[in-house]
Length: 152
Image 1 (spheres, rainbow, N blue to C red):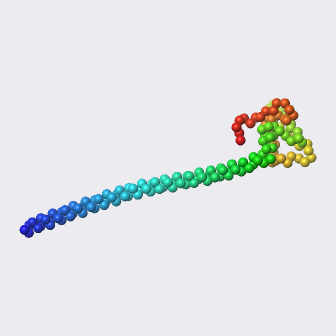
Image 2 (tube, rainbow, N blue to C red):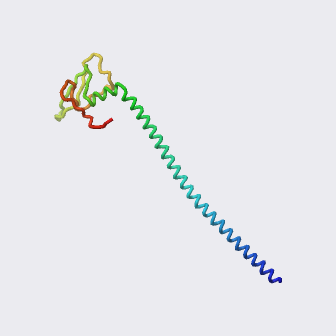
Image 3 (spheres, rainbow, N blue to C red):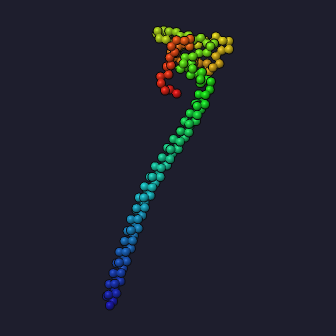
């Protein structure tokens, strides 16, 4: 009888030890799995932060672009812009101005030079030669539009 109690106690102890090893192994496996998942989540979080920063920069760039477009939209409504386009694209000049064309030292036509014949002077802009390139004067004849297409 004493032998049987020892056997059952020893078997119970072995079963208990086996159960403990099984439980510890299961806990360790779960810890390893949770650790791997945590590493993956950190990597995803870092990637999402980079994406967020990139998207915020794009938003800021687009907002700045929108502001520039709105400012340009207001500028094209001004008389200064209209006069500049009339000079550059249509070759027009004011009534009080003369337009001179000359040949350069290499025989090529130079940009036209304007002179103001009025006593008031040209008040239409930045003081630079606003005539553009090879336009014709507005005294009649065939006027050409050298805009080259859809420039805006």
